[in-house]
Length: 84
Image (cartoon, rainbow, N blue to C red; front, side, top):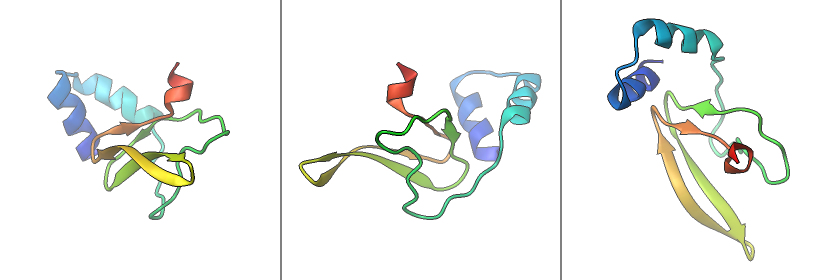
């Protein structure tokens, strides 16, 4: 969780106790390259903190992938539909 903690603390001075409580709620997972974390038409109940690697978010428009954003180590990825 080194990269995640560093990213959080760079944004706000979070206490070590708060970090400990957050870490207790997280489950480490690994995914292969090109794995789809969030898929159209499927409810996504999770947010993903990226410790290593990166993700690309995209829409499919008229059969073509249109990249909307990238997320890298220390970032968080989640479904915008479920946010709202």
